[in-house]
Length: 55
Image 1 (cartoon, rainbow, N blue to C red):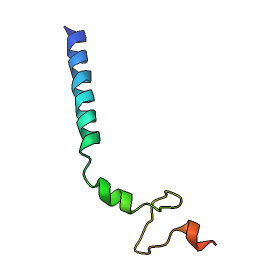
Image 2 (image 1 turned 135 degrees about the vertical axis):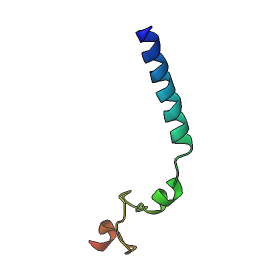
Image 3 (image 1 turned 90 degrees about the vertical axis):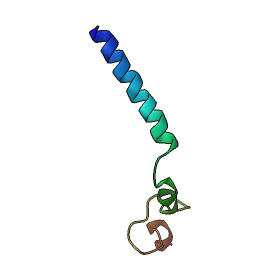
Image 4 (image 1 turned 45 degrees about the vertical axis):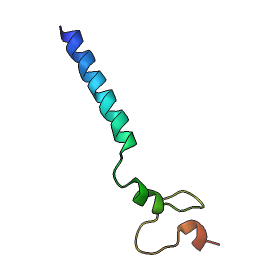
């Protein structure tokens, strides 16, 4: 009985993880915040990343 409960809990968590990946809120905004050259997140209001400022 205990094993069955643990199995159902793990199955429920797996289903939630699958749906969470499909419908992650704000994913477009997070992609827009990344630097197209290096992939790091740009923090603050400035549009330039550190990889472009150094050159």
